[in-house]
Length: 284
Ligand code: SF4
Ligand code: SF4
Image (tube, rainbow, N blue to C red):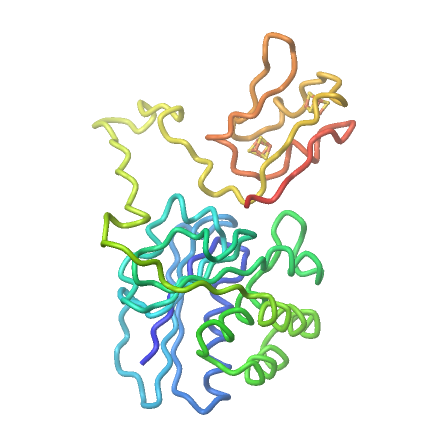
């Protein structure tokens, strides 16, 4: 049995990816299963989804804790979530990133693969520039890197089950299939987990308001970062005023500065900036 775990953010299509993978496996004549796990349901929040593929009926119904394949739709999760946890030796870590597969940190003994699914999705007009829908491009890459499903079955699953823009999604999957980059497993002694769990935030007794937001950086959800082009900035302060997360501060010179640890990448500052001097740039 092949067990696959998807890590993404709300809006990227991780849940649909697991469902499409299962549909494609079924069209390949396999016995599939897929289901999501939601935490806080909100655009940008971390989302996990699971899939299993076997030649026989699958009786297990638990979450996938020891996957053969981990698929990461948002590279920002590498720094905040132990995505590689439980990956079986010889397994595969596939990440949507511009980074080369060889440069991908991953546990010893795990094969690595990368695909720039964000660029593919933007080129195919899937989603928005702030939240490209990368799932079909990633599935194409997964098809080739893991052999979990055939590209023909994936084509058919997309045509049958993707509710919007099936042609663009099929083309994105084909792009992902052609553009995935693979690297062999890293060698060397086993060390501490590449992505250890972050320490828990201590929450004091009593009303929660006593915990300052300064002690809880909230930037982990960000997939796009605002870049302020000072040369065109009029110092109107609109970005500072409209930022819902207090992630922009004003320097002594009156120019705005990003407090990156608190910016969720919502893009409100860029939308409100009158001379459009703020550019939203995709994370690596
Ligand atoms: S992107 Fe959103 S959170 Fe980040 S600085 Fe702009 S308004 Fe604030
Ligand atoms: S809204 Fe734009 S012009 Fe105004 S201070 Fe911010 S970056 Fe500068």
